[in-house]
Image (cartoon, rainbow, N blue to C red; front, side):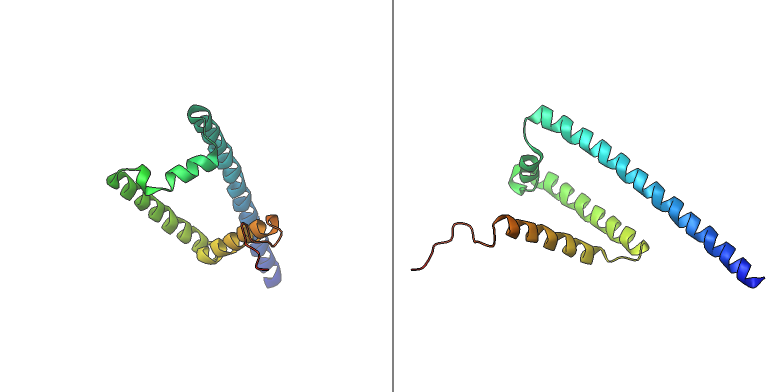
Length: 123
């Protein structure tokens, strides 16, 4: 009898987790869709690629001191929110970021074929 109660609780819990996971995936798709729409709109208006815009927005010299401080404050707030979200999911945000950054670096090295760019050969 007690085993049945436990399995019912476990089944209900797993169902809740699956429902939450599906909801998060749906929200991610919706967010990506909206982000892509905004990015396309900004690209059309400015005539710049997303990479060019990222380069412009990551340079403090393109903003007044107060605007740059506001941008940095928003970045810090978003980072702390992401850390809290990852912590709630039982993950380490910094470790996940490091994994992502190392994968990006590996892709860059692969593209270069293991060679150093603009390397002067010593003969």
